[in-house]
Length: 116
Image 1: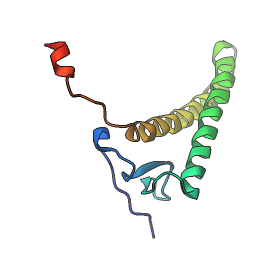
Image 2: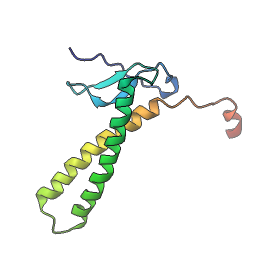
Image 3: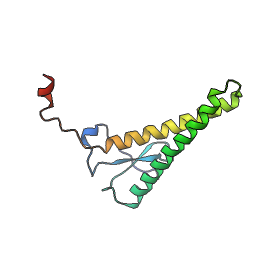
């Protein structure tokens, strides 16, 4: 059975009880969400995986730059670097979306007067 997914589209409605976008997709490739207060095992696991994904992105970027800066790099190495960069970008964008959805709603009271 595939996990139930729910998409939160408005980050201003995010709260402690709003579903958290997890850093991994479901087996079917759909987003996975967790409803939690943020202190459980799956939340900690998601935090650790996010940190690992971002660290791997830094490592892959460094290695890819070496390949891409060398004009004699074989096509297969350049292609492999591009594929790995796309994977890391996908992970980083999912982490950014998840963290953005968990930000508190901005305090907009009184800000309209400042721009009038």
